[in-house]
Image 1 (cartoon, rainbow, N blue to C red):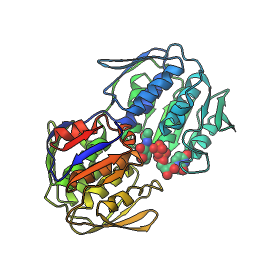
Image 2: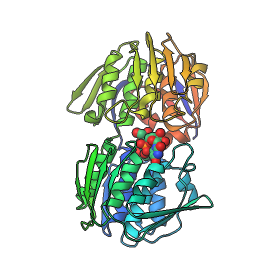
Image 3: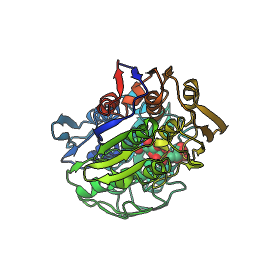
Length: 417
Ligand code: UD1
């Protein structure tokens, strides 16, 4: 089940319904810990990371069940149980349990989620902000001990608009004594979704979607009934799949308002993107035109999570484009396998590549090394002539409910197993 087989060279055609957002579902599920009542979270994608979060909530004493209508979380009896170490270290977003548990219980012990504080993907911004709110941290034997005897509001200025840090601050601040003001907050739609959920539980938050958030703490929270918005990154993946294959697709329920930068780039690449009542309708030319430069940026700029898919679509376009990654180092691991398939990509430095479109890619055996890079290899396989085998697909299944089913609905010849 770890591999995906693709017989490429077929343009995508048809309709597909876009799943709920992974990056919105995870912090919202963590936030259900804050209220002692039951919450229902609808439209959660059935993906590995959501199952992991359910497992973590369960280990903390929540009663969690997946029903037809959504995930029901009864957080009446939260205890500081042992959380399975591998569920924490295997998923960076388990970090949002930090703010949620500090808010609910005033303390938490957890494995360090994905690496050390000063290394790659540090958590210094989380720690500095929560520290100003009265949280004390200690690191021992690879574990993080956090305790707040009197969680209080604070004026915080973030050095970088970190999505995860903004979410952790929100989760702690709604339970803290007094007001918290966050300057330089992340504006990503997933942060707004968390604010919306907290507000539906009774929290008082101003400025959602802007870079200044004001949270009035200690407003009593009740359970919430909330629908997770559609996944803008999954929709963007299929948008660039359409561009890569010269297809014509309708992405049902795509969150068009959150996809401006991706739609703008697809437009520059020659695709006609039209909002219709069912979602987003896209018609792409046989070969995409490459713009001179694409740079990833915090929202509303072009998302880092779509960079690899845009790169994959460009490999078979016309012209050349420089792609600059400004958010994460190490986001070009997909370049060597794309080159194996015949792509012409030059690494200018660790954060910049130049891609020159070639007429066709050739199917190969390639290995996914991370979630979005893996999805990009699937797109390359769709565009390539012949058969492609993508291994290491457990990464892809962390974020896509059923990428093969979705792409088959769009006419692709693709199977997993
Ligand atoms: C979230 C998303 C991820 C997306 C990213 C950027 C989830 C589960 N994941 O990740 O898919 O790619 O936003 O849109 O929602 N940083 C620090 N110190 C910190 C925190 C972050 O230096 O304390 C750096 C990171 O190393 C990275 C950059 O800031 O270079 C962005 O990180 P952040 O916005 O925090 O991303 P995540 O919340 O981890």
